[in-house]
Length: 451
Image 1 (cartoon, rainbow, N blue to C red):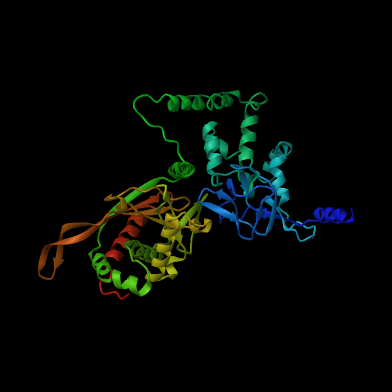
Image 2 (cartoon, one colour):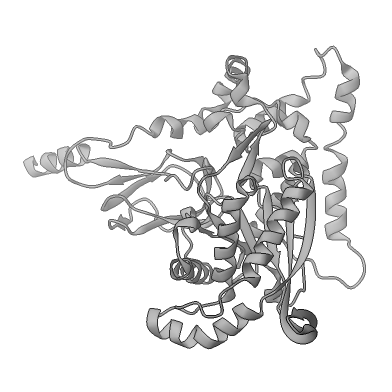
């Protein structure tokens, strides 16, 4: 009997550690729980995967920060959870009745949402700058709900946000939708309420008809989560930035000849395959130094010029979707350093091993449409950047060349470049000037460059 009491006391004084939703990157404030790998009662080792999560950038695994037994899972699969929130509790069994994190308060917030909802207007009046504004970030989930409910961007900007930095959370927009129907009664402007109420109704009604009865010999394919995120990101980019695209062509014969001559020696010496991508990225970084406004973003009526040159490269995932891992501080690296980063990130993408930080902080993007056989493309800007460069396939063509003995026709390796840029701050002179500089940099590549 005495032993049973002792065991009971040990159980009461177990040590519980909170597993926290980790910070996934500079601009990411929430993540979706995709799949739990553990359930209450399961043992877990330090650094063992507990769950899979997804952000609007990349999927990732969350490892355990302690060894012990899972006591409680605080969220269900498909729940959207703010970073810094406790998502599970682990009994470490060391007999010290302590809880290591102060994050249960945010975790409790989603459960007490109905009680907290009336306080939202007060928050909006005390901090209007943080809860409204055209430059507030909206997660793809919030944008999806807004689209389904017929809520435009102008209306979305005035929804009070209770998330980090005034962001609108899933709960905020659902509370707004639930209370929107009651708002017109006391409102003094019923004419404005009339179009808002029927707008969400026809859209959902039409969607099932299109899906369930498309007609003809068709196949219906549901978008996966990544494709939905890409779709939202592309639509938002076109709605945000007035796109202009400039084109030029470039003679890359020196680059092709140098690579053909040195690729085997390069791999033997450094253990890395040398592709054209690192060479293009090096040239882009050199030109951004001359045109720093290309390496910027827009914040309201301010232009944020980035001092670090972090170049993203569009890369295919096994699913066929594209993702943009980022080579950080490209301006500080030589061709070998860039090559190692390019190969490492490309391999991680192909094997679904990219980390959240791998896709964060990009200031400019390169996309190689030539990989798919295209001569040129008109890429969409990767927000919040202001420009994206596309390189086409390299083709042999007869070209007129000037020599000291007169003009001659020679077979050259030619490639088209296209630059899409945000015409709010990048005008034709800057955009075309930068694009021409990149072409000149590539054409001037030293065919005798040492490895």
